[in-house]
Image 1 (cartoon, rainbow, N blue to C red):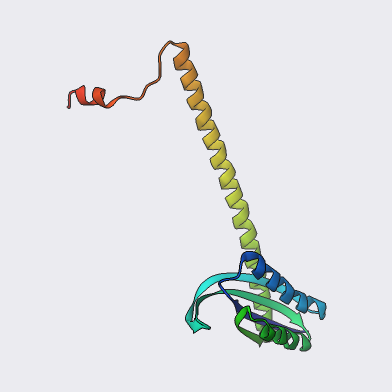
Image 2: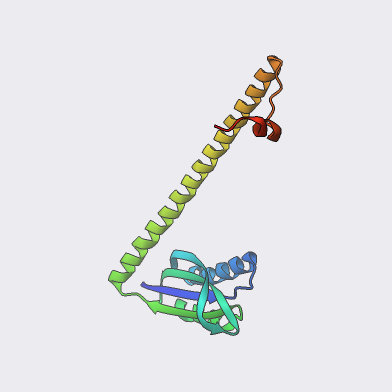
Amino acid sequence: MTTYETVFITLPSLTEQEESDLVAALAQVVTDDGGTMAANDRMGRRRLAYPIRKFEDGVYTRFLYDSSPAVPKELDRRIRLSDKILRHLTVRLEPDWAVAAKEQAVRDAEARVEAARLAAIAAAEAAEAEARKEAEAAAAAEAAEAAGETPEAPSEEASAEAPEA
């Protein structure tokens, strides 16, 4: 099987659901015809170099897949029929480039998983620190109330009466 890379630009006006449905349908074309997806990357919304059909922005998506030569032809046909895709390009990768591209796709996927894991850990630590701070503030207020003091913030008058050093 030959390795292909297809990059296409969808309309920026599509909702997330419409875009994901479109991408899923195109990915289904690859897998239905016997191809195997190595990467399905949403590269994000970017400014176009020049306006295309009066759009200044577009959402880029990249497919990296192994398939027979019939699959890119069918994918190209379906993309041309869709009015939701501004531009597309499919290239056949040389074997050594294909191996490097697949390895990079695996590294990128692992990096995304690791970044999500670290973000979840950081969020949990921040929530734990906030809860600890609130507990300490509640304990300090309770101790001050037990001592008969009322915890008050210094007023503006008190700070104005204090002599300046």
